[in-house]
Image 1 (cartoon, rainbow, N blue to C red):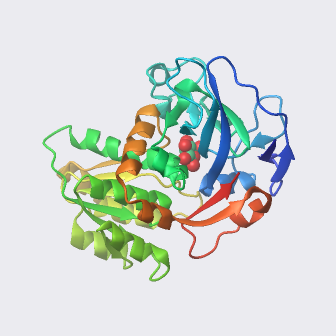
Image 2: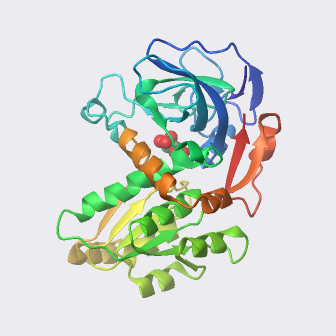
Image 3: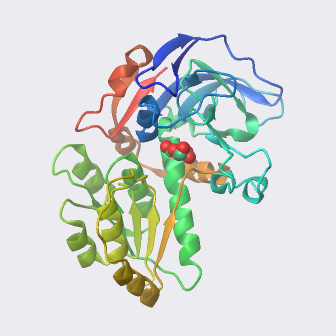
Length: 348
Ligand code: BGC
């Protein structure tokens, strides 16, 4: 079988490799890979900025945004051949730490977790893959064309859950949400905000292309102005920050309503320092009981929340997030971004 692999230490070493067919263990599904999504993390791995091969191997099978169809399942596992499934990305650290021991490996304290297709475990960009039944999530069969959006949706399902939990430390009834960045994470985050009944606003730099229209079709409001001006006017109760750009992050922190919760999901690149008034931000955050939280990855609960969110969403809208589907042999095209790309998918 063929798989998309990389030598994580070497930039531009992606290739399609012929590998032996995987053999499922007694508690594992054998899955026919249908598609993988490509995200910023995959691009960083392709540039040798991130990623780690499994111990004793030079190459890593890429792909953590999975979608496949079950070929074989252990009896009594609850899965059957033909089920549409997605594999969870992270596995607990070996110790395990307290969070990992409580199935909250997304909040691992040691950093010794592994991640399929990213850190120490082969991923899902393969014609066949195996996954432990405990780390597989079934999807509504109608989601064949868009189920590859599950993993990024799980990341924002977690972000929204964390926002709620932080908000519920006291009386909480948020009304207005601002999402900064209209990439897949921002748009899926906006989708969940709308599903939760909030008045959702999305801000990005582009004025044309598919993003403004995707936001409007959600029933949310698109903005492309200055973050300070837009957020200052909206005074959002919640900000889902999905750009990782320092100036946007800080503007979001300075312009929430009292008791605002800012959830950071974008990973800022170091070395783009800006001068900011930390004392002013401190004063405002204390006097308004504001909170800023970081959120990464997702556990099984969030994958299930994502499966529900996708099942409730408009299929045509979800289709609109997938800009291009590239066959495995043309993987290089998937790693060459185009200005109007939202999500690019490799078909297996
Ligand atoms: C993935 C997460 C992962 C993170 C860091 C993201 O692209 O969606 O599951 O934890 O990268 O490796």
